[in-house]
Length: 194
Image (cartoon, rainbow, N blue to C red; front, side):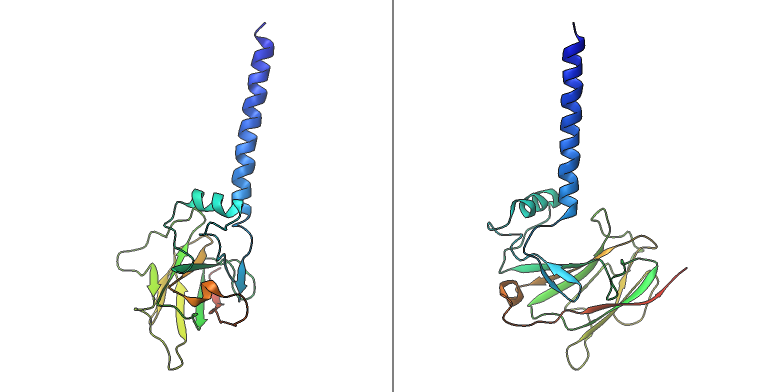
């Protein structure tokens, strides 16, 4: 007598857990539509607005980060170097070139669990517009590695893959409709530990 209700309950539980798993997979598979890609960096200008698509809204709710308005900031992400190889903390990289016009910007590395690395005290986990040295033309040159470097340096954890996040605060790039070209820094792999 309890056999049929028990089978129905098991079927409903499997269906519910499967739906949750597929939803989480869909959130990880995309950040939304309408991405802006430049030199390996991708941003979603509409992700923080009311015009965002349902996937972007769900991603935004799942991340739980402070949201910036479209005119306030734009987050560019890169998870590969200029040769489209996944970024690995076993390697040294050089982020060089020009950052798009903005009042302020930050560059940081995040890991698959969306956290910053645990680093020794005093090691830089973030580089920003006020702390970086630029050349005469306004270009940046930042070394990323898991060992201390001279000059502009962003520390990485000892192992694992990571993603770079370049956040531009108060930038006209967020309103760019494709008419005006802008540059993004390149990510060059220097060497990798075996």
